[in-house]
Image 1 (cartoon, rainbow, N blue to C red):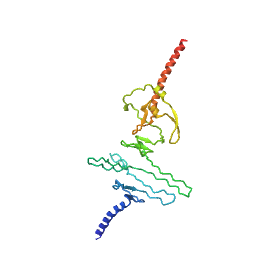
Image 2: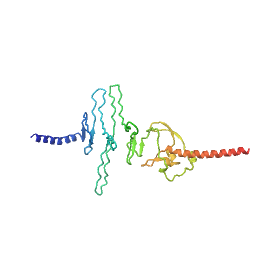
Image 3: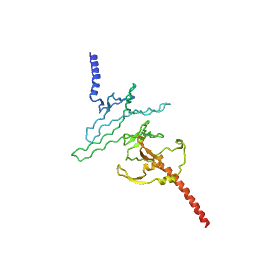
Image 4: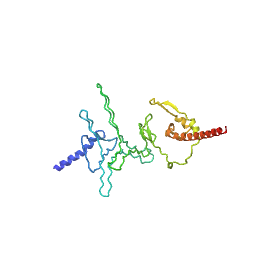
Length: 296
């Protein structure tokens, strides 16, 4: 009898719990304030099937004064140490994978494409609002930090890295619709200690010396201007003007073919050859002056 009752309870839970999850609008919740520890086990959290369902794991809210909300931490397993002739194990991988797009139709005459793959979005917490009637200020939004792993203690080892591998896709900073391999939003700025551009001979073919560098430099015009986005005063050249003289260093929008910008660093090649040409002329003039001085 007890066994039958247990089976009925298990069957009831198996039927009711999925229905309860559907009643929440297709969102499966893992309740906060619980600690789940799995040793030597791969934990897989799969979002429920569509339509528009979400797997949501949420940390608990703070309940005391001046306390932060409880955190949500995912930590993979440590690698095994060296045992005998075997190498030490690598730390476990944490992988976030968006769902694959739905299949396209499979009958003639249907041109409906397959679905777009699911995005992966990391959203930091919103700063607290400033409440009316108080003298406080709104809170600052949280940061998203990607930090490579440090090397182990002792000799050797190196810091890990952060790799953006779009596999033919595009990376945008400040824009969600980049059109270049790496695109920073207009009006944005970047700061770096160095920027290396591939320039090895092994990457090039049909190498030819630049001709007429002095004449090309003479046609370029440096200007000062103010940016429309923020009014910042800058100096430079106009890409459309440069396109008429040195189109090799001008970039265009891949969709509209409109001139966008230019690679200022590559102007160095023109400047090098222009200085060399002028130096030859200076040396020729100097030799001519010396000859005239000797005749007097």
